[in-house]
Length: 204
Image 1 (cartoon, rainbow, N blue to C red):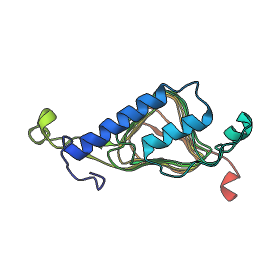
Image 2 (tube, helix red, strand yellow):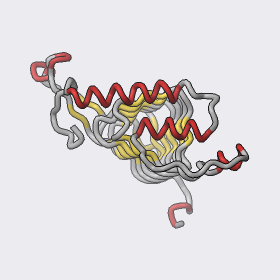
Image 3 (cartoon, one colour):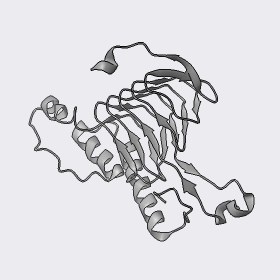
Image 4 (cartoon, rainbow, N blue to C red):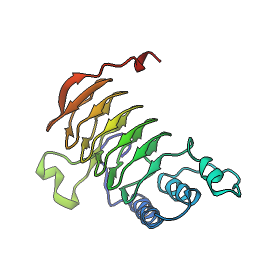
């Protein structure tokens, strides 16, 4: 599956992990008013992050600050398919109603901003309807990579096999079907390059 080859979604191990991930998402979504420490614990359970938590601080603000540069800030609700194939950097904000089909590896870099209702569709089906065969046929997927310092506008769809280059911006409502060059603004359905982004940030 993670190599992008045809696989059977009904496999017992895959289904067991999807059930685990669904329950982890439900627990995370229900914890809107929990302290940051608890929210990070629940987030890490979704993505299979086994790092040990730092010792708790007695001051709530100091304790919250421990996780500012270690984990993304994720608004709820979210829906993630497998979790273990979803990697997110630090300083990143993922807004509510995020949908992630992480059949293959999906990565989000550092200092990335997501608007609400973003969907990352790493899963695909065969085009041949005979092979596709409804729910009885095999599935496949392709990786998605969102590089550092990207801004993804609200209600953007990123399709399987796409890489969104460093420092780029994707306009709200876009459907991204092919790679986005670094430091470019793209928009539309399908998304197309509107203009390069003028910045001296790339030289840093």
